[in-house]
Length: 118
Image 1: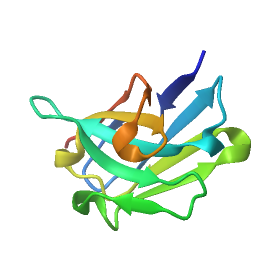
Image 2: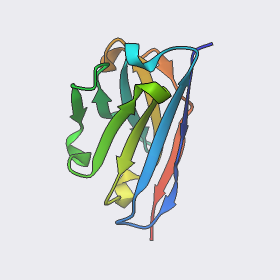
Image 3: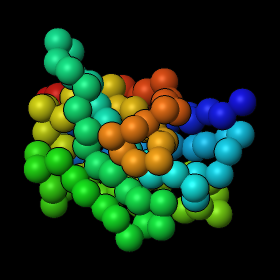
């Protein structure tokens, strides 16, 4: 069974940092693009970052550029999202997903909650 499990969420104050992990089982992450997405209360899910299956392709939504860094360690079958300078508007459930490209995600994790408040 192909699965993704996110971890590393939590509550932090503005300006703080968190590192999210997305671990895969039942398939090799190295064959897929991996996207990070988030959904805030009352809002639609939005893409945060996309990392290609060779690690050379890497994009971010404008709102997180310069603050978030996605990386992958295929040997560990894990992808990370380092989030720095967190702001209250970053509060959301964060999901990772895998697919042949980030607009075509078909394997989803269950999400991890990130809350940024003072």
